[in-house]
Length: 301
Image 1 (cartoon, rainbow, N blue to C red):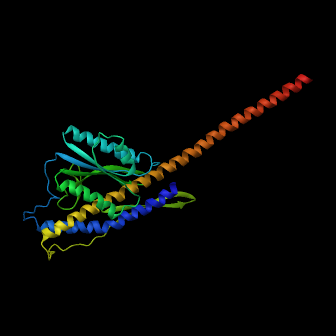
Image 2: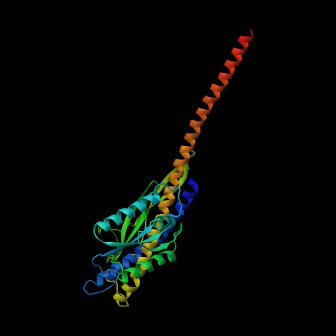
Image 3: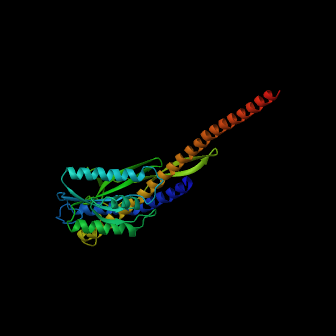
């Protein structure tokens, strides 16, 4: 299971990096459009910030176990965020993605859930679009004033961080922002390759920088920038959801790889311990039998 997870996490990372140029280029286009619209009064519902009365939490979990605390950590993060919203007197609703999260919320009917969605190890644009359509309708219809995305960000093969990012309203310049308003948008990815060195499994790390096209500061658009912005923002929303959905399986597979490695080490240690106990018991039994034979032989003589 460790080797299978290692092979799958490589494919999952490749999916993240392959989608990066499109997402980064889209950010550049959004930035240039917003630069031209700074002097205009543009009313776009996806970027409109309003006082938060109700929030939607999109919680992304895995579909399987045997991955350590991966699912528990993101669920704990969601529970902590729910407590914060309650303390602030805000309402909330949950959109659950993944079988583990679905089963958790189904056992707790007192938690309001707007929709249950299935996840997958290889997320597609179609799955991201299903989430985007749901949060788009909730936000535009003003049923919720904010949409937060809770998922596990891949850091390394031995570390993953449950994070919360504000999905809606979108940042005007196309950045990803956390709940504190700190905008982050990592353009560097680390690749981890499982290889052998001196007969032992080892991990090599490669840093890959995504190259994107540079736009001219005097870039001109044939269409009205407002029309382009209206068309690009839903597309950008979809791309950010897809990126997060791709990060989560990478974290899950890395956690499973680490957990199976620990399980193997524990099993080897347990085998050694049980072998020692067995040998001691066997030696004690043999010694006892020899003593009985000697005692009986002495009694006969």
